[in-house]
Length: 224
Image (cartoon, rainbow, N blue to C red; front, side, top):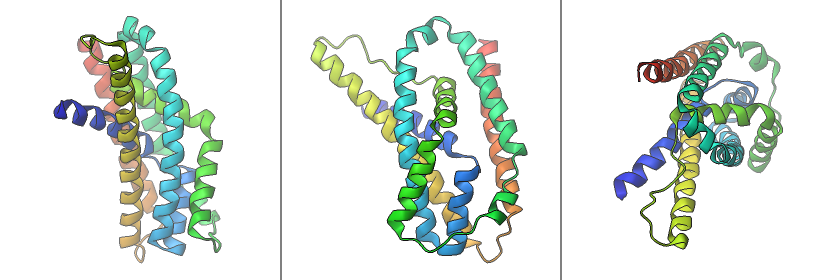
C-alpha cells in the first residue's frame, strides 16, 4: 500500500516537474524578480505559478479521466502522438530565447502577496496553452486513473478513486514547487555572476531532457 502511494505520488511529481521545466515568459518574470528583488520574491512568485499550474492540472486531469477509455482503446497511437508532441515541445524549448524578455522586464517594488497573486493570475490567463501542454505529459507518462476492481463496496471504490486522484495532483504540485524553488535558489546563489545568456543553457538542457523523454516514449511504444 505504501509503495503504491509513493508510486502514484512519483508519477504526479514527474508530470509536475516536466511541465514546469521551461523558461517561458512566466519563468522569466520569476527569474527577474529573483535577481532584482531577492530570493524570497522569486520563490513566492514561483509558488504562484505552481499553484496556478496545479489548478490547470486538475482541469487537464479531468479531461484525461474523461478520455481514458479512448486512451486505453487506442493506447499505442495516443502514446506515439503524446511522445511526438513532447519531442516537439522539447525542440521548441531548446530554440526558445528568453534573453530579450529578461532584458525587457523591470521588476518594480511590490509586496510578496502581490508577487504571488500576479504570477498566479498571469499563469491562469495562459490556460489555453498550458492545459494541452500538461495533458501531453499526463498522456506520455500514462498515469493510471482507475483503481483496482477488487474493492467490494461502491463507496470504497469511489473513495479510493478520489484518493488516487488527490495523490496524483499532490504529486504534481510537489513536482512544480520543486522546480521553482530549485531554479530560483540556483539563480540566487549565482546572482552576482548570472548573465541572461545563461538562461539559454537552461533552455537547451531542459529541451534536450524533455525531447529525450518523448523520444523514449516513442521508441518504447513502437518496440512493444
